[in-house]
Image (cartoon, rainbow, N blue to C red; front, side, top):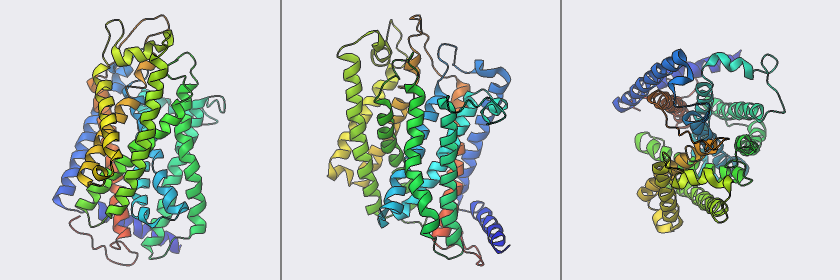
Length: 412
């Protein structure tokens, strides 16, 4: 009963914290709420008209929704790059950022699940994915593996930070014997969620653009570049707008992770390009469509030829220590790298896999306004969830939220 009383107090104090703040905070949360409402309106149109309201067709059945899903799985997996140094290697410089990284993973996973629901057409078909009720088809279907690892990773990233924050809320230290096994498990689980997602594509032999042994490792490399890059940008915002101060040393260490992962990702990209274009076959048509257009069809050219230069520019700039250690330059590099990988791992990966079709027909895909509206709404949902989680966690970690003490948070 005592722990339930503490939990009730934590919930009350958290609600008090997230509903109070500065004018900028309320403008931010109000803006996210408005965007979510617009997304819900667009989704209501999709529910009414079906997937015909989107740009998806029987030829290109995955588009903007699955592109964002694939990318966000990587963002979620990137939390392991903070969990491992903090909990396993005991690097205290990462300790400040690890709870923020895990909060970002939770928000990313919620967005992943939301994009899957949007792509399925509506929540009414989700019963198919419930074991014992629907046709789960485990273990034969790779999709069922993805359902298991994503929900398992979501549980891990909720339970471990919650336990640590719950203990800190009571002004007690978290017991390593409780959270360390879960933290170690999350390291392997994070790799698993992205490899399983890659296997979803690799296992489709009829799609040669995806049927590539390098796809899994490149998924991980791009995830460990884009995810920590986003974490750096989030940490920069947090330390500028809250009293939770992140040391420069912490950001610079995360920047090293981004740099190495971006370099590996670029090497793998070059390797893939060599394979596709040095000795091209009819299986290279998807890559030709993506990079040069095919038979006069070139809808993706502006996207990929924006992503590649941004990727190269960010990686080269991050490679030089003087540029990387300049925080303003670092933030710029992280932003353009994040955008570049979002394009490469989104439109640059998903759509070309369907082109050309089985009989050589090219049906191009571009998202409709409904898809864009739903997508922006889901991203706003993720930002809303993360803001709530981060504000509560920062309150506890800075000592403003404590059991039995009055909440003194004002103006944050």
